[in-house]
Amino acid sequence: MSWTQVSYTYDGSFSGFLTCVYESYRHKEAPAAFSTPEDPRISLYPERPVKSDPAKARQGYLSLARKISPSARELVTLGFLTCAEERELLLWNYIWYGYARGRAAGYDLSDPRVAALEKAVRHLRNEVHLFKGFLRFSDLDGVLAGEIEPKNRVLPLLRPHFCARYPDEDFLIYDRTHREALFHQKGSWAILPLEQFTLGEAKEEERGYRALWRRFYTTISIEGRENPRCRMSHMPKRYWNIMTEFQEDAPVPAGRPVSPPPLSLPT
Image 1: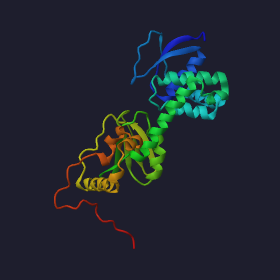
Image 2: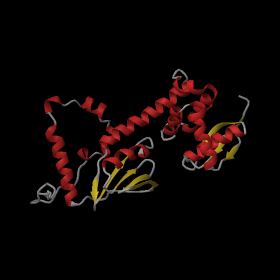
Image 3: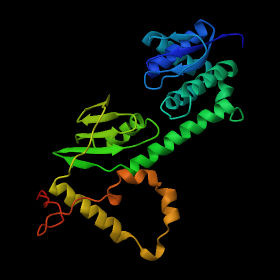
């Protein structure tokens, strides 16, 4: 390739990245690096700032399905949510290869560009799957709140699952790693930046619920069949810091039952 090598600086959004792809083909520039406000990079190549342009981004987005395939477009979209090292270069190399090879590129796992992106997206999907089971909510004055610490940006993929599961609940899920949160109220949702969030000290009723959950977790275990290695395989240790069954709360005051208030069932 005889294209000019440059270092792109953009805003870090998916729209901004697609604008970079558009500009690279328009000006025959091969990006040697991508720099964002959250991940600044130093490069010896000429630096060129690229302003996000929705029209150019849309044109680039539609071209992925037209020139490669709809599944390739989905792969690129998911790839942008991954924690892959030099993610933008990985995506740009895949797109360049896909534009050159067409539909066949999406199935060519023998090519390192395709294989690397498939691996990164597989890691993203696996992490999303685990958080669907490992996320624990706490009651904060009528709002369900949970915290996660993912490697990838999983909130956009967790949103459909939890919005469908709790359609009538107000809840939020805070991503400690990327400092953003999914907010949900009945009929609406939003993923917004949130620099800091802590659950704070749980109230007595919430501590009672947590104690019941830990008691249930302990009761159903079978001591003679304990297998720490197997548990680590299915429940990796890096998830334990967000799971109620591995946390300790202040004890419920003496004389109070460790149970939630009775439910009023319709007759």
